[in-house]
Amino acid sequence: MSTRTLTKDQMLSLAEHIENAELNVHDITKVTNDFPDMTFDDAYDIQWEIRRRKEARGNKVVGMKMGLTSWAKMAQMGVETPVYGFLADYFSVPDGGDIDTSELIHPKIEAEVAFVTKAPLKGPGCHIGDVLAATDFIIPAVEAIDSRYENFKFDLISVVADNASSTRFITGGRMAKVEDVDLKTLGVVMEINGEVVELGAGAAVLGHPASSVAMLANMLGERGEEIPAGTFIMTGGITAAVAVKKGDNITVRYQDLGSVSAKFV
Image (cartoon, rainbow, N blue to C red; front, side, top):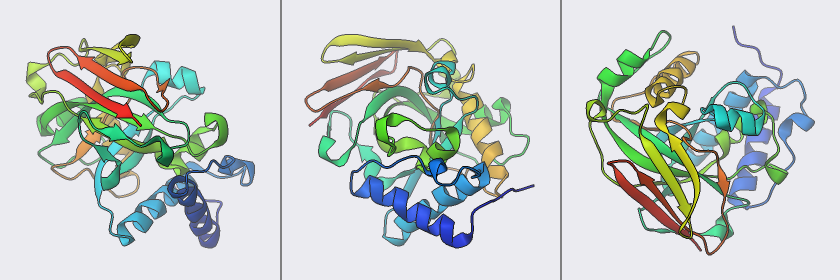
């Protein structure tokens, strides 16, 4: 049963307002300040409209991401459920590449594992076994998040409307078959300018990163959408998010899967 409080015009104007904050690199107050009765359905309507706006401009959606999936991250943000967002083509940065800080407001990075599917996944009722059977390979990925809300302060409904703070991602290291890696114990070390700032293991992502993909399939199913074969999915932060600034060199090392690095310029 969907619950919506916004009119179509309000939804369209909020999508434009939030996307402009991203494109013009300026922060805004969280949208629930002005629309306190907004629901998750309203917020996902806004996110899907931002997605439509980008596609109409010729951008391609190249993947999906889950946010707030680690207990560490939920505690850090004071929330209780994960969220999803989409990844646009221009969010992608090559391993070892530069990330232009002039295009971002207040970026943070987190270490993740991405899944690439070889079969569609559709909720409701999608579970971890379905996900493992439908996975082609996994690959290390680092996400740069950048909330468009001032001081990174928001509630869950506002963050959904802001495409789950998505902005840039770097894939690298080595791809692996899912059966060859113990994703629960997969160790990750994040370094900024050669100093270790975060450590984590795959179990931080809802107990197992494949649980995150199952949850995405089930959340999309509520909107009549599915995860097509060949989808790249970032499963959520194994580490807490760490703020980065111009001049920072970041490297994330993954047990047996190599490393991913980038420079913020």
